[in-house]
Image 1: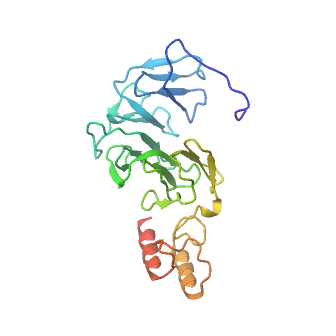
Image 2: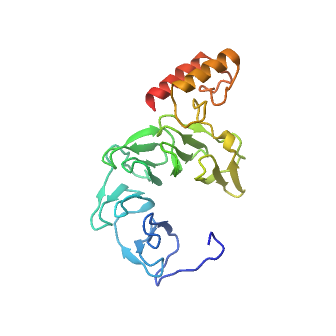
Image 3: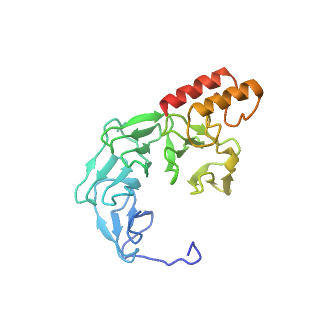
Length: 272
């Protein structure tokens, strides 16, 4: 009922410190995980829980929205993957930095291509295009939150440990910074809305903020159709010549729209 009433569920063992993930296919299946306690699974909306001792310290979880027996856990040991609901599992750390104190705090799966995931430690954001078989760094910043947009392919956001909100519109090739209009407080979380334009951002000890839809600008997408193509280049040229329709045209953030922005846009189109 959208938070009008809450029901308390509990079990016979200590549940403090757990994070909970709901199954995207079965709404009454919950997963409880913590770096300090056993992995938990409930198939009856939290009325009872089954413990699973993984010898793995999970901090976050990503479930395949098309096949809920496949999911990933991130943690101290890197990335764990199961394709049979933990009957068996493997570590998928090829390309990741696995050293002492390199904790992988977050992981997210692309709902439009479930072979694509993002994960991050305190130093870098990593991406896989092959379901975790190999990882490569795409951003030299540690991240504490990651989320894919639920309705826009290629759109994802992160909150970095330096408290910046970054959003990509092309699967991580370029990242736009949307922190400038937020107050000077640590950022704790964010959520994309399904209306394709609004972002909700929460801060520690302050409030929840809504990013103005007009600010959610994909640099280079001058006509606002969520694609980078020749039509955007034409509009940037018109902006330079006639000072018209300069929305989202300043690709190098120098305050002017000029030839250098066209060069960057062409590079973005080729890399999108």
